[in-house]
Image (tube, rainbow, N blue to C red; front, top):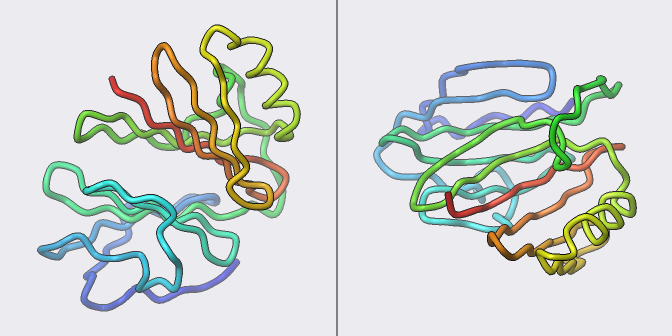
Length: 164
C-alpha cells in the first residue's frame, strides 16, 4: 500500500476507512485540484473529477457544499462480492449537476465484459474505445450512459455517468 500525505491546506479529516477505500472530508472554500496529489485528472466535471496514481484511483467531488476525497486501493487478495448488476458491485454513487455518477468494482475480464455488453445490449448501440492500454470508454444509448473502465489489479473499476 502506498502512503501519501494530503496537502495541509485541504484540512482533510478521515470520514471512513475500509480495506479498499478511504474517504476524507475536506474543509476549504474551493474545490482543490487532484494535480496536488501528483496525478493528472482524467475527466473533470465542475464538481467531480478523478485520476489514478500508484495503482490507486482518487475521486474528488463536491456534494451539498462539502468536498469529499475518496481513494480506492488495490486489495492484495480479491474478496467475493454478490453480483446483482452487470456493472459489478456498487462502491459509490454521486448525484449532481443533472448527472448520476456511480463507481463499480467488476470481477470480469475486459473481453468478457465487452462480449456481454455487445451481445446483451445491442439495442443500446454499444461503442467501445480504448483510451490507453487496458483503459476503455464505453458509450451506450437509449438511455445515454458513459462508462470509463480502468484495470484495478485482477478486477475492473467502472465509472458510469448517466442522466437520472
